Amino acid sequence: MTTPRTPKYQVIAADLGAKIRGGELPPGSALPPQKELSGHYGVTLATLRQALQQLEADGLLSQQPGRGTFVAEPRAAYRLDSLRGFAEDLRAQGHLVTTQILGQAVGAPPAWAAAHLGERPPAVRLERLRLLAGRPAVHQVSWIRGSALAEADLSATSLYQALAERGVVVQRASEAVRPGALDQATAALLRQPAGTAAFLSERITYGLDDRALVADRATILGTMMEIRTERAITGLTVSWAQLA
Image (tube, rainbow, N blue to C red; front, side, top):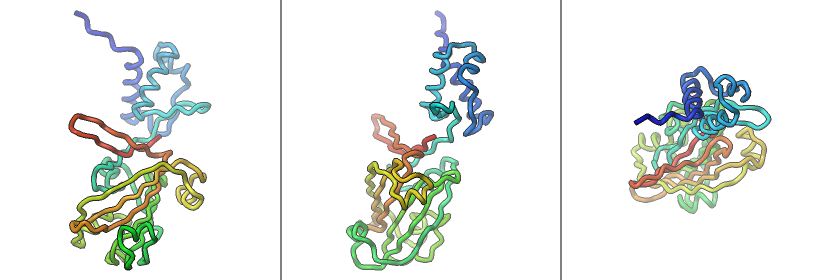
């Protein structure tokens, strides 16, 4: 009985994939023209394109009409089904995530946040910009019950960790995500044109007494992130993944 021969396009995809993962083809670098690549591998353009499509589906390449084929930035995932925050999820995968604090002060929550936290102040308004590999990716405005975190340094510490250090236990969170577009103000912060596709997230975090601790709204660049799911008999895993 003979062993089935591996299709040529899979051989090409495996070779290029190894070069990308090994650093020989770094993120952002352009691949040679398709005609040149097909000649190098001794295959037709159709076979080569199959390989490139597979690598693009795997998140390793980005084919840009009129420009060429480029090595994609490493993909990242943000688990929606856990209580870890955006930065924690990405750092756990080895990605460089930095946080810029745009504002942090005690104030009266707006109507949408007060509906969860209650109308009586105080609450801390925390505005953050998340950068992924130096590129702005997420703008967040969080309203935190009480004033304990008014002076806390949250540029390198997660909000959940800061709460835990003060004896506040997070029990659960509910989150709704819908599609949207960047308004003028948020577009300027994320260095994108107004109207750029975005995900709009609203998350409410609860303590052990089931009172809301944090009301959070985030704008996530749709050109950099996507929602992915892994389906199995045991359940469903949902995550964010970085786009090329």
